[in-house]
Length: 449
Image 1: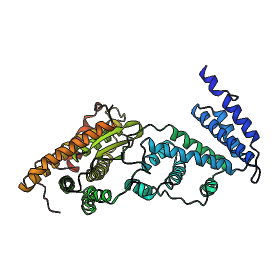
Image 2: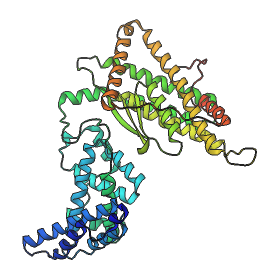
Image 3: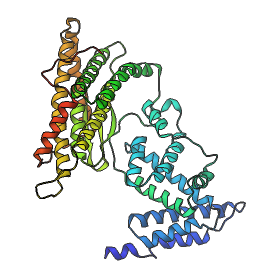
Image 4: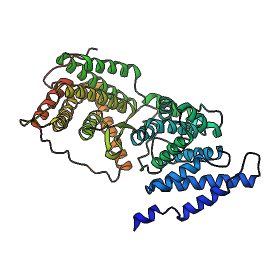
C-alpha cells in the first residue's frame, strides 16, 4: 500500500542520510575531505527532510529536523546548505514568473510572517548577484517596498543571527526554512510579466521611453485625493461626484498617453502587474477588478487558487486600475459592514449569502457606471477636431495590443460564469451601494477639480 511505503523510516534516501550524517563529524580546521563529507551529509539530510515533508511522513521529518539541528560537524554547515537551497529556490521562482511581492504574499498566506521574513532575506541574497542596471524598475520598487536588504555580515552567520533576532531555537529555524523550501518547490508557473533580473539592460533610450510611459504622479496624486474624499464623506452625492471625477481624470490621462505613444520615441507595449484578490467573497471581488480593469482599457486574469489576478495593460492604465479597484473595494466593504448581519424569518444567519449577493451586484453596477464615465470622457476628447483624427485608431491599436498580450500569455484561458445569486436583499443593497460609490448616468459631473 502507498501509505505504508510513505512511512517506512529505512527507505533508501533515509539510509543514505543516516550513513552520511554518521560520517559528518568534521570540525573547522580538519581536512577538505572531511568538510566535503559533512556538506554532503547536510545536503542529503535536507533532501530527506523535504521528501518526508512532501509525503507527510511525520516520523522521518522529525528525525531529519532533529539531526540537522544537532549536526555533529560545524553547525554552520547546515546553515549554509539551507541558505544555498533558498537562494536557488528563489531564482527558480523568478523563472516561473513570480514577482517579489507575489512571492512574499504567497508565503505569508501559506505559512506565516516568520517564514515571510526568511523569504525576504532570501530574495535580498539572490538579488545582490545582479547589477542595478539589469534589474527592471518595477522589481526595484518591489524590493524597496519589501525591505529586501542584506543586513547580515556573512552567509554562514545569517541564520544564526536570524535566530537571535527572532528568539527561536535551532530546530525551529531549520523547520521553518524546510517548510519554506517546500512551498517554493510547489509554486505553479505564472505568466512572465516584464524582464527577469539580469536581462533588463537600461539604455538611455529605454529610460526615456519608460519615463514617457510612466503615469503622471501629479495626476495620480489628484486622483488619490478624490478617492480618499469619496471614501470618507458621509454625503452620497458628494461621494458619487468625486468617484466619477476620478474615473474621468484617469480616462483622459490614458487618452493623453495613448496619443503620446505615437511620438518619435515609438510606442511602449502593454505591461502587467498582479493585484491581490483576498478571501472571503473572492469571486465577486475578482469580478469587480475585471470591470474596473476593462473600464481602464486593461484585462484581468484571475488565479483563483493563488488569491490574485494578473492585470495587463499600458502603465498609466494599470496604475489607474489598481488605485480605483482598491478605493471601490474599501467603499464596498464599508457599505456592506454597515448593513450588519442578516437573518431569515426563522432566525438563521443569511449574512454570507447577503454579502455574496451584495458584492456581485456592486461589481455589476460599478461596471455600468465606469463604462459610462469612460465613454463620456472618450467622446469629449474626440470632439476636439485636432485630436479626433488620431484618437480612435490609437485607442483601437492599444486595445488590440492588450488583447494580443492576453492571448500570448494565457493561450488556454477559460472564462467562467458568475455564481448564482440567491439573496435578493443583498443584490438590491449592493446595487444601491454602487450607485453611491460611482456616478449616476443622468447627472452631469463637473470637470473642474
